[in-house]
Length: 305
Image 1: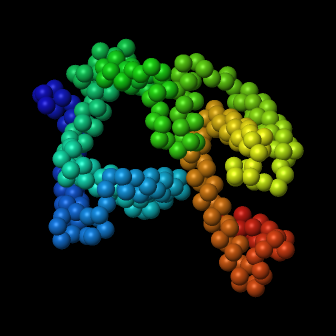
Image 2 (image 1 turned 90 degrees about the horizontal axis):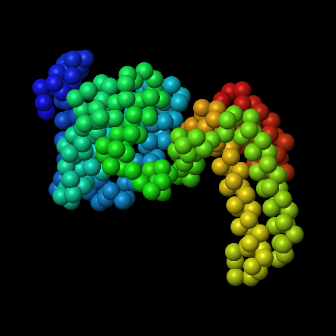
Image 3 (image 1 turned 90 degrees about the vertical axis):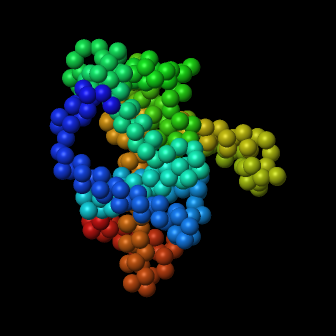
């Protein structure tokens, strides 16, 4: 590390906080090493990076939910779980001899410095600093230039930068954001509203076409005719177009659709379990014949939850 960079890193840093964090990370990492060591936890020792993928995803969503609820105590716990999964997986790779945890952290710090030449003018990204950076959007534009021109991450399409493995709603959102950077975007949210109306009408047309094909067979089974399968696939396609348009609408309104849907899922869970509890307390069977009572408890849940 050169002297100018060290000076820049230390200029606005609280040394006491740095030492405390360093000590805490050392304590945390030694715990992970112990869990994975011979004589450690059988479950932890059995895991691999592949087996930990879902845990990493789930803990990330739980952390996002805690942040959305503005629950600092819960966020602290869930962010700890995210740290745990990221560090545990990184250490697994170190044990396999693929890379070291220290390399993960160092490369991350190097990347942050490289992509913030407005903070670290001596960094490799300085060649892409086009004047003074004053807004968040200017930072993001500069970030993209550094990725493409300094790091050599320019692909055949800007859309290639969006991972194939993203969950569908998140991938749709990211694809739309990338396309918008090229100017391929709706001018106003109202135009997207019109698109949603258009796509919904096409869904209804596809639904009616499917009903006309339905006989005794279920689509995609051995007894289903090709015409039924095609009608079901067409409805699936139109539903996808509708969802894509709704994601676009959320983006135009500045709403992250993945976070929004996650919050709605959690809200539905809380309200539905409230209804279940009340139906049981009142001795009312929870079935279609007693939907009126369930609906009453659902409305009550809206007030208390």
